[in-house]
Amino acid sequence: MTGAEVPLTGGNVTAGVVRVGDTVRRRVGPWTPAVHALLDHLWSVGFRGAPRALGIDEQGREVLSYVDGEVPWPLRFDLLEPRDQLARVGRLVRELHDALATFTPPPDARWNVLIPADRDELVIHHDLAPWNLVVGDRWVVIDWDNAGPGSRLWDVAYAVHGFVPMSAHPDWQRVDAGPRLRAFVDAYGLDEQQRRRLAPMLTVRTRAMYEFLREQAALGAEPWATHWRTGHGDAWRSDAEYTERHADLWVRALLD
Image 1 (tube, rainbow, N blue to C red):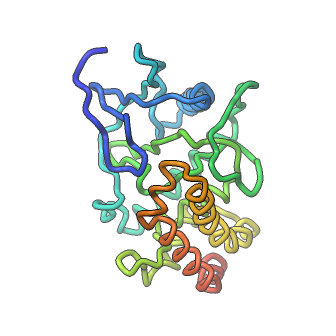
Image 2 (image 1 turned 30 degrees about the vertical axis):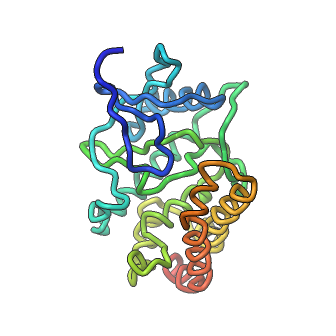
């Protein structure tokens, strides 16, 4: 290994993540071989919105290509403010899912899915959000540790929560949340049946995050217990209540 190690911060779970030159080094887990196979597949089919897997270093850490750019959440959300930029995210997610649809996991694949999805259609990211997007010359989805079986709509429901955003917090609540939801979904290209299924899932997916944090906090599991103590659980609960309270708005935005 050559070059100094520079800690990378900004996310909720970044301990031990460092930059070395034009690479990123991260801890490995039982899921790492399957994730690297997935990233290899994405590059083999021409999808460039993900980092490249470059193996394991001499310290036993995974090596990924470093992507230069800015992460929108929370300080640069202006990068996603124009609706055409939000639509670009929707198209990126569609291109990602279409590329993942042709991925055949290794027979011994092990995944690190924290919250089981509604159904298993393909392998998905499970954490598509503005804290896992790098905006630069390329727009790249990072942090693939929780990838695993799921569905397109499970990923989309989570994505619109963060990218619209669909938030109860007064600093993030949008009067144009409905039109922004529509812009994302139109860009992704959901058909009418999928839109009808997505509408109730917006609340289901948000509430699933609250329930996960509550359960993990009760078990004392880190880093989730710390997230719970610092208010993440309250935020997800409030967002779920907000999303449910405005269910009619989402239906109109998606279908009218």
